[in-house]
Image (cartoon, rainbow over all chains, first blue to last red):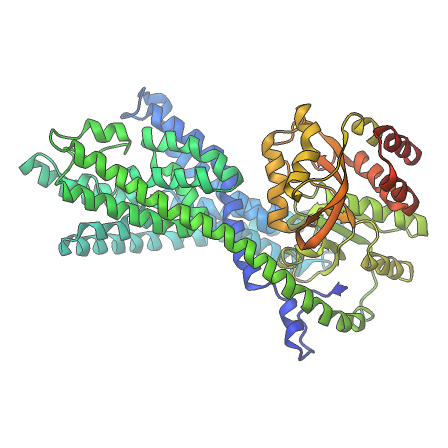
Length: 484
Length: 145
């Protein structure tokens, strides 16, 4: 069956329209996978930065003023740039990566806080811009001018993006800060302290934690501590319990790399007090923020139940700093609050991670059978379509998940068959789905990977196969190529 | 090339209980000689869970593999032949598993090319189905290489 990637406008059969668009499931999966893929390759850099910070900052284990100079620039520049580069590359290849980085530097310099979320938006956006532009001018560049057009288009568009992101981000951050400040003040006024977690946890992950801790909670805490010797305000946003619970949940129920890296992150987060280590895990599975909020609220609830507090703001928020700043009589309350928060976050996050796993599997089976019945209906239509195609084909790309195994087998076999039939002038190569080059005329994927291929290559002809050696669709393609 | 790499990495079993077990069994020689880590075996299984049984490359024959995320130490390939076919998802029955471990996207292409030659000819494939010793399979391979 040959599936055309162009929208099937001319047809009234709704099934055909459906199959030509990625299903909602594929989109949600692709988006979740997108966030994960943007963050995961960079976790190593987060760990490097976390180790450096835990050790060398003034309140760290072996304070070292010189080495501590790296801390600021690394979190402000290195980490967001890495995210933007990865995000840009995923959308627009190497040119997208460059564009993403250029956009991100505008954001970074334009704001005072580390621009993680911003980088995760501007990176892919930069990739998208350059990809669209490249497609627009494709085949319109006079021969010999490709290099100059390529470099200057990226340069000029990048220059504009840099300026736009620089001016755009300041006001956004400012209004976010104002919103957070007002919201917290309103919540403090209600007296229901656990509600603070509703703001605290999202704000932390967005790196507004210094704003809230040093701007609001620590001043409130110092007032109270001056009178009673301790304050609960020092604990509301710095409790290391929820982060511990989250990372434990990833340790047990996460997937692949996320699972393998979580234990290391626990050490740096919980004992080292560098909360930033858990942020990427929340960013890649945004739903887990629910667990963080519930855990944080539980912590605050337990602290107030025991009337516990700290004598000063714990920085960094490690369990050791906590215990060191706990006044006599508050130990039970503080420890209980941290543990309860960890337990609640662990339970909820585990549930979220497990639910996601099961749902994926069930929906896969369901959608497979739907897909099949649609595909059958589809088949008749496509035959008509396929005869109308522009038969100017010189590049066929086989694609699969890794771009190493089955796609390579398919491509090799197809080359052999072309040779056997004496067809030449066709480039057949294998790629990871998202990396298949833009100038491919046809992309061949296994039918299970159709949605993903469709999503990555909306306007390409995609041929699906079930058999990498001899599939009827490949035979048909061979016939087409022979008669081209 | 393929025959050299497969030497000592071929084994036969009567049956297995699940396709997951089939992948694990077929990867065992690679695990034993240190070409891959246990994580790679998990990745290969996870790959099928996530992307469907697209590794069933031809009816009856699977090529378990996954992206190398650190689990592949050295490029290699192993073969498991089952007397009783095991169903993969979508009820695809498989009795031959060529487990592929590729360090990168290019170093193993000779292997793949030989594998393709092996499978492209119906006649050779039939002989492969009938073979029941390592020598027979290796001899067969040498005829196509």
